[in-house]
Length: 188
Image 1 (tube, rainbow, N blue to C red):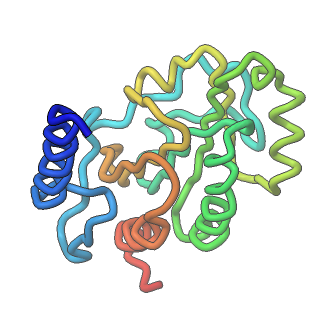
Image 2: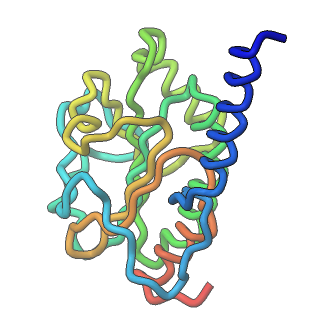
């Protein structure tokens, strides 16, 4: 083996060891459950639902009309496997807290052209047993208003209309439940 290959391998090993020894912030790092809520990086006030093509399971909603409620805004699309994996958790939260002041608003923002069809969205709602309000955001206007970047993404809005929690992807289900319960003053 030539010397340059040995040196390259040694450099790779050293950099790998250095990276694993360097402290970093991880999305899976333990969290202090009594710490203040994590505030979303996008903004403090929740934007209104804008550019909505259709509303399912509800008349049109606005953030102003939802003041006094805790709102879980869930950005998803039915063609996204990760989104579909979160739906049982979102529907469970809705069932658990809807009579205590939680409003769940699904914001269906399509990634692909076939996901823009209202009939396809309606079929997905039926298939997944979704009965909470869903806004069809075909032109990504609400997505952009939130500065959202990923599917799925959940934002929890407090009774004063402020985003107090934001999470992208799957997971953190118990933490989301605790934040909602704390905002509603409910002991789970």
